[in-house]
Length: 378
Image 1 (cartoon, one colour):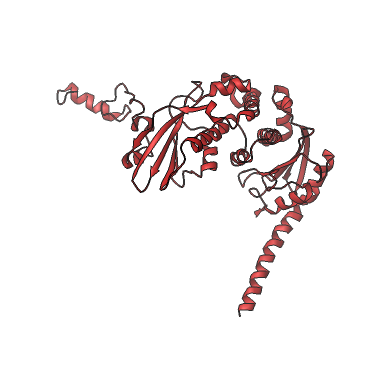
Image 2 (cartoon, helix red, strand yellow):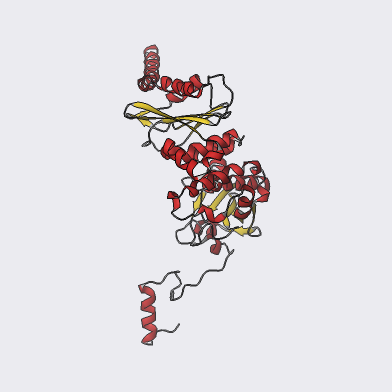
C-alpha cells in the first residue's frame, strides 16, 4: 500500500510539472525569447544581458506562469541567482511579458502575450533617451504601461545598483526617488539602531510615500504583521525640502516598553545631487506631462552613486523618547496623529471644535447652542 501511495504521489507531482511545461509550450515562450535575442543580435553567452518579467505573477488562461522563468533562464543565460533575471511584481490580471535588455547598447526588446501570441517591440532605453520629453513619449508608445518599470529598473541594473535595492524595485514594480529614500532610511536604522535581545521594530510611515515598500521588503515590516503603520498627514509631500519621514519604535517585549525616534529626509540634497528640481515632481498636468516621468527616472539613476551614503540624506527629527504600551496601541488607531500622541508636536487647534475631537461637527453646534441658552459655559 505504501508503494502504491508513493507511486501515486510521484505521478501527481510529475503531472503538475507537465502541466506547467505544457502551458509554457502552448505559448511558445522559448520561441518568443529566442526571437527577441535574435532581434538584439545576442546569444545566451553575451555578457551584460538582463531580463525583466512578470512571469510567476501573471496568469495565462487561469494557469500560473512560473515555468516561464525557467525557459527564460535556459534561453538567455540570465538567472535569479546571477542577479540578472528580475521577476517584477504585477497583478495576476496583468498580461504576461518579458523584456531583454542589452547593457552594452541599451537596446531592449519587450514582448507581451495577448490574444494567444507574443507581440515584440524593440527600443533603445538609454538614460539620455528616456529623460527627454520626446524620448519618453517614444518609450511610452513602445512599452506601454510597463515603460516606467523597464526604463528605470533596467538602467539601474546596468549602473550596478545593489541587488537588495533591486529587490525593493521588484516588489514596488518600479524604481523612483521615493523608494530610494526608504532604502536609505533602512540603511540608517540598521547602522544606528540595531535590535537587541527581545526587541522588534515598528515603523510608523507618516506621511507615507513609496519609501514604505523598501522598508517593508528589507525589514519584513508589513501592515498585515502589524509591524508597519501607514498614515497620511494634511501637509503635501513636496511642500518642504526636508519633511518628516516617519517614526521608528523599538519595542522590548520582555520589558513591555519601547523607545522611539523620528526621522526626516532631505529631498533638497537629493535633487541637487541628481540635478533635478523639487517642483518638477508635481508638474502641470500630472502624469500626462512627460516631465512627471522623466524627472523621476533622472532622479533615480542620478542617485545610485550615493545609495550607500544614508547619513547624507537621513537625519533625526527628534531626540530618542520612551514609548509605553498604551502609546504603541494608540499610534496605530485611526485619527491619531502619531507625532502628537508621542509628544513630538503640539496638537493643532481647530476653530469651532468645542468637544476636542479635532473636527467641527453637529456635536459642536449643540455645545454652542447650550452656551447660548446659558446651560453651560466654555
